[in-house]
Each structure stands twice: as C-alpha cells, then as structure tokens.
Image (cartoon, rainbow, N blue to C red; front, side):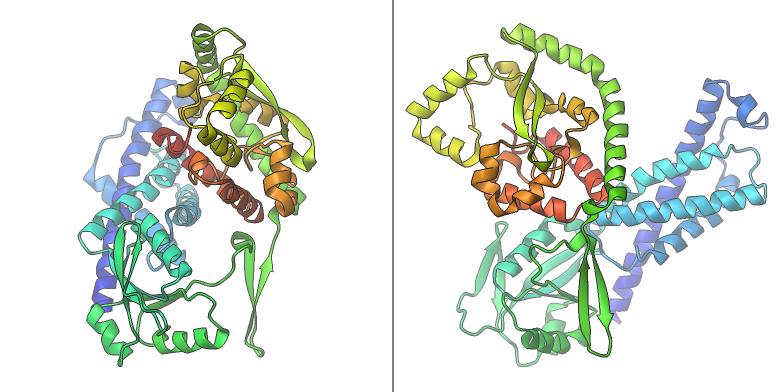
Length: 489
C-alpha cells in the first residue's frame, strides 16, 4: 500500500510538470510564431486569417486533447515508470515529443482545425518542448527529491569497489531520486562497519535473520546488487531472495570493456541463456556518413557565427605578445596519418626554450609533464593565453580542421606519436579507427585533472559506444564544463 501511494503521488507530480511544460511552450510558440509572421510580413504565405495571439482560457481548454496525447506518448515510452539518467531520459523525451507533435499536426491538418493558427506553430512548440521539457523535469525532480516525494531509499548489497562506484553514480545522478540508506554485505570475513564515499559515511549491515523485516524497517523500495567477483550461483541466490520483497532489483554486472551502448540482448529460452550482441557502430559506412554530415553542418554554421569573435581574439593576441595569431602543430590522426592542428597561440614564441629550462630546474614540473604532458601555472603561457586556455577558446580554430575533414567535432583528443607508443599501446587501434575530436569524453570527465590511463580508457569507451546521440550529449556537456572552467589549464 505504501509503495502504491508513493508511486501515484510521483506519477501525478510528473504529469503536472509535463502539462505545465506543454502550456508554457504553447504560449511561447504562439508568441514567436505570430510575431515572426507579422515582423517579416509573411501573412501572404501563412494566411490572412492570422491574428496576434491573445491568452484565452477557452482556447487553452480547447486544445486539452494535445497534452493528453503527449502524456499517453510519454507513458508508452515508460517515462513515468522508469528512472533514467538525464541524457538518457532526454533522448526518450525527444522521441516521444516528436511523435506526439507529429500526430497532433496530422490530426489538425486532416480535420482542418484551428485555421487561425499557422502550421509552423507546431514546429515552434516542438522546438521549445525539446529544450524546456527535459530541464523542467530535471529541476522538478530535484525539487520533489528535496521534499521527499521523488526520494526512494535504496539498499546496496555488497561493499567492494563495485558498490563504491554505484554510490558515486547515484550521487552524480541525483535527479534519479535514489538515496542510499546503507549497504548489506554477505561476506562475513569483512569486518569494517562503515564505508566513506563522496564525503559521506554509509553503514555496512550484516545479514539479518529476517531480510523481509529488515527491508521493511529501513523502508527500502529498491535494491542494487553490486557484489565484486560473485559467482552466477551466488548472484542467483541473492536475486531470488530479494526479488519478491521489493519493487525492483537492479543488478550491476561485470561488463567492463564491453560496448554497452551498442549492445543488444538476445535470449535462448529453452537453455535459459542471455546473449549480448556487440555492435561496432563506427564500422558502418552509413554511421560514418551520418557523423561526417553532422560535423559539417554544425562546424560550418559555428564558423560563420564565430568569424567576428575570431577577429577580436586575433587582435588581443597580437597586442599581448609578438608573434603569429595561430599556432599549428603536428598530431596523429585517423589511421595513424600525421595531421596539422590549428589553435590560437597562447604561448610566447620562445616557449620551447622556456620549457627546457623549467624541466631542468623544477623536478615537480618535470614529473607533472611526464605524467600529463601539461604543467599547471605554466610560465610559457601569455596573459591572454591563460584566459584562452581556461575557457578552451584557444581550440576553436580546430573548426577549420573539422571542415577540412581531418578532425571531428567529437572524438579522442589529438595526441603525439610518442603518446600513442607510451600510453595507448594495445589500445592504439581504437585511436586510429576514428578522427580525433575538438572535444570528447575525456574533456567532460575531468580533463587535465585526470591521469593519462583514465584518458586512454575514456577514448576506448567512446569508440566502443559511439552513437550520434553520444556526440550530441558530449557537445552539450562540453559547454557546461567550459563555462565552469573545470580541469582546464
């Protein structure tokens, strides 16, 4: 009964958020659509019956079937039952919104409804919904979490490395609504009673006499099973014991190194076997064409918009120190070919001599250079260069590389041949299989604050799990990282 009541309250809260998002975008779409038509004198194209939009309660009620259609579409996509991470939920929302708006436009056109409204209104509203709905849901869930409506207590079975990673993941994805109430460890050899993760202490419980009573006392709705090195028999026993006592059981499996984003589950029912089909999306010519087309459209549009900004940055560089505006250097590209990378110059022209002197006189700087090929508070960098690096503006000229076709908007960071030999080693074929990118998974995961092994693993993970949606997600997250100036120096 407690589970059902909480679920109904959560469902109603999400429906209210979605209806609010719909009517907000309805007003915005009418405002922009009508003003666009009248501003540019397009009445002869869109019709003479159009009038400036006036807020009307009767009109709002007359279109109530459209938000109902949206809610049904969201329900079909399980956006009221499932708790998705933000970007995964956004992907499902985009699909659901496109279908709902498309169906609404089809019905309105066939039945000749709302003749006083231009059909481009639906395009405006679809665009606004695609941006506003994900963020309203995100912040709405945060608010609901703070007032305990969206909060769901979870128990993690296990207390090893996998459990720690699970806690970190749930802490980073707060809007999922999961709050770790504690851990349960069946390994009696372990004596520690607490574990500290993300500056929080979590109690480790020992196996209770009655698991059902234990779960009820702690008010647990969901159990994560994250046991290191468990056998199939041990895992099966725990799952079968917990399965009937809570709403949902989530297993954290051992699948490191597998392309999980592009994998498909298949079943052999008689043999009770799961098979994972792993797809290499970037082996497909169609996917490579899609990625290249996306790169060209976005990079050409960005280049045109940024031309005045490029001129301003060029002038500042010239004023700050003598030397050229751009700096070019050699890096390894796709299939191991050497390419020339462009950047705004951020260093003094005698940077190599300065670097040699630093490495000879500063052991700490030498160690940092050997580990990361970077130095914090680098004295070779000009005053303007420091700003360009902190904001990553120095890398914007790489748009030229993207247009030329030897780089991509998203991909592994361009590296030297020595870095491939010293660090990528057996993973070099992953790097060679794609074009290096202006940004990538490493850049949004800590950038210069991470070690080189982490950088290699993120590049490998990106290639294994590539999709167009992953590229879009990384581009949006890059903007946030740059604005917060995380890990850049």
